[in-house]
Image 1 (spheres, rainbow, N blue to C red):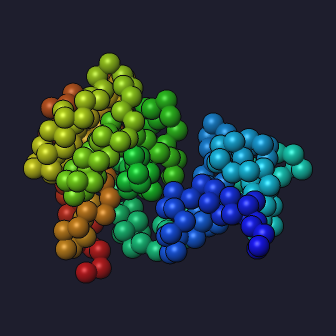
Image 2 (image 1 turned 180 degrees about the horizontal axis):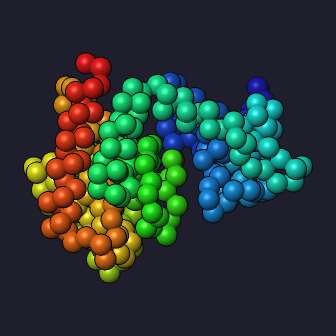
Length: 271
């Protein structure tokens, strides 16, 4: 009788969300990426055991992935604790540099920020979150530092609602139902049915204003960024403190500036 290698089999199946019959899925790559994603603002440095716990990998598997990433320069270690190395930024830069959008958008975003005297940002949607991919900051008005790569829950942000609104209905509804919808302030809308109504309204009018749902005192207004064929690539917003501007003033003063910039960006993108 042929001896079965149970440890190898369990390792192949470990953390494989696609199941053993999906031959197109490279499980080892997925597990390696899960190790990278385990690091965060809350866990910038971890021991081998902590990485294994956060990823669901065995200690042996986590060790091999960490040492491989260390040898490639994406992770560094003092022998006990691991942390991401600056080279990891190359992965994000490869994405940013592969898209004409950011090179085209930045001058217009700078113009928006200069005109309204507020921060202007752009983001894309990934899963339940928006990810900041471009930003022209002014005075910091949020308690969270919004650097490139920062993530915020899509359901409670103006850019997130713009991006959710332009997903196919089934995908938008799925994310509303499956993504966490924790109340972040007393004003946060968390009911899935109410959020769906908001998304339909955003889709119809082409912009979204969120008033202190993400953070007390913070208002933001966003529009989609499209290519020349009308496909939504990202969202762009302006944020302001509630003590400085009312929602009606935001719509009257900021929305025309954002819309004009979005149109200019669409025209400037390659066809």
